Image (cartoon, rainbow, N blue to C red):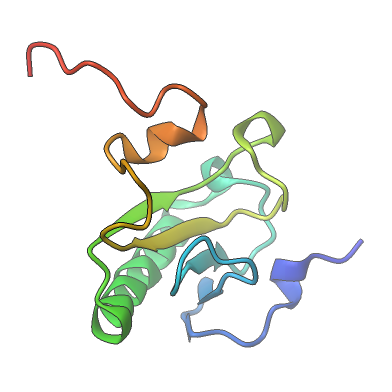
Length: 125
């Protein structure tokens, strides 16, 4: 079986253990995926060295997006397992630029992955 992320060669950034490229179906302008070169199913299977390599490209990608698109914020996330929304079972981290006005109410950010959980009462903070 072939893996679309293992075969990906049009990388924006890369290092020995990871690569970064634009998402084929972006959630927003500039949406980047960071993936380890080794075919590992999810984030929790990464070695310490792979975590460091992914983090390096995450930071480099963020700097690139700041310069090229000047987003107003970011979401960073990894879907793990089918119940977590993962559809490609090769670890990948989403770096999603956010822009003022791109959704009516951005408060709660990634909590919006579960319907009805994005907004909540902040108590005692």
